[in-house]
Amino acid sequence: MLKWHFKVNYIINISFFAILFFIFSAFSSIYLKNIQDDLVAEATFIASTIKTPLASGKYQEVERLVQEFYYHSQRSFAVVDGQGKKIASVGELPTEGLPLGDILKGKKYVDKFRASVAVFLENGVVWAVVVGLPPEEVGKITQIQLLFLIFTFLGLIGSTFIWKKAYSSIVKQIKRMIEAARNIAEGHFNSTVHVDSSDGVGKLSRELNLLAKKMRITLDELEETKSLMNDLLLNMVDGVVVVDIERRIKLINPTASRLTGAHSKAAIGKKLISIIRHYELDEAVRNVIKNGSSYSEEIVLLPREQILEVHITPYRDNKGKISGSFIFMRDITELRRLERMRSEFVANVSHELRTPLTSIKGFIETLLDGAYKDPALTKRFLRIIDAETGRLCRLIDNMLDLSRIETNQLKLRIRDVSAGELIKEVMLFFENRFSEKDLTFSENIPDDLPKVKADPDWLRQVFINLLDNAIKYTPKGGKVWIEAEPKDDVVEFRVCDTGIGIPEEDLPRIFERFYKVDKARSPEKGGSGLGLAIVKHLVKSFGGDIRVESKLNQGSKFIFTLKRSK
Image: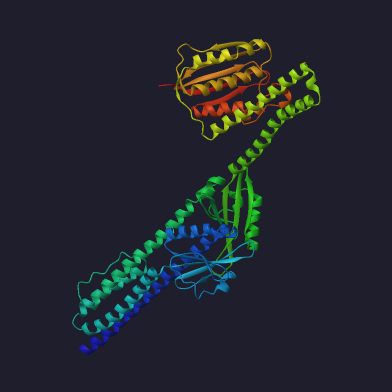
């Protein structure tokens, strides 16, 4: 009877360990498959990220990106050329034994703890990205597997000899272990087995608990890596959109959502053309998926006229088949605007300098040709040359002032300023010009007007520039006046005139550098077009704001505010 029980128990014991071994093997296979899939995904993502710097030959940028990925994922990385030479690597990652020839033809390679994909450049050069687990992590996994097999074997032997003495107890323990193993196989790694014994089964239960704990830690690390990669994608400065082979959006990061005005969640699963309504972009993505070659272009999104630099590259599945494409986009609207401003600035400076220089040169040549013999004519020409020279000096001074203001190199002495007294000082400066043009001037400034926060010298320049414009563009017999009144925590100033006014279409650009309203209408007015730009930047530097109200042939009103002194 005892022998029969032993045989039965022995068979049960072997069956149990066989089942446990099968569960472990199945779970181990699933775990390794998940690791391999993640390695392939990371290799594909890295390949798409470093493609642009590789194409530009910026290997230091590639090295920096590889270091950044290593910091976030703790994976070993290597970028190798067609001869197997590493141009960037981090961590211990052997590249020997890789089927480099097949990889460079576009086949994805994955073994137990390594994965490799190709990076195709437009010039035909092919690189390979290799991603692998660090040796210590490989050793950890191998040690866990070996440890489980050893303890399984020891448990099998030990339980065979002690089964007769603890049959009922072992059966109960085995049931609990089977249940725990089933829970672990289902992914419930918090499940543990409590066996209070020092025999082989007790040790096996503790090792099973240790295995579950290590698996839980490893998977937590894997989830953390995924989270870091996700955070990296979400916080990229560039917009990223991933579409499948049918050009349906699979992923869109917040930057891309902001650039395109699309809602991330609502865009998932939708056709690209329905979210980003740009036919040329959609057609370019279709061609990339069809031809398998990368493509770059600049597109303009309406109605905001936003200029985006777009780079499109395909991505492939495990079999090397194109499954969709990555769309990387960068907002270069401001860059193009600055380039246009620089071009306009150079053209305007050239024009403004050429006019007085041409005049000066012409009068000098006339004098050299013999006009100097006529004292009256010589004196007249010299006065004109002096005026043009003064114009050049004023232009250069204005340009220097504006440059210092715009680059924050101007040292302002902000303090409490009595604007009423300052305006009266400025008016003395313009008395003769008011008389020459028979202009009426008045001021409406309360005696108890609060002081304002400003630099007195530069605030004086603000009023001088505004009044100078008002006098220039107001016909004889007209009127110029200044108003001021406190409003909440600011004081509002208004410089008004009954002059020729400003066309409505010119109002938005009136404060731009070198911008002049219809130069042909009043060429005798002169001016460099910098005065109002200086006024705007000075008022902004004081913490205020400025605007203009005007109608053609009905006068203009320049309104600006400054903070009240406390």
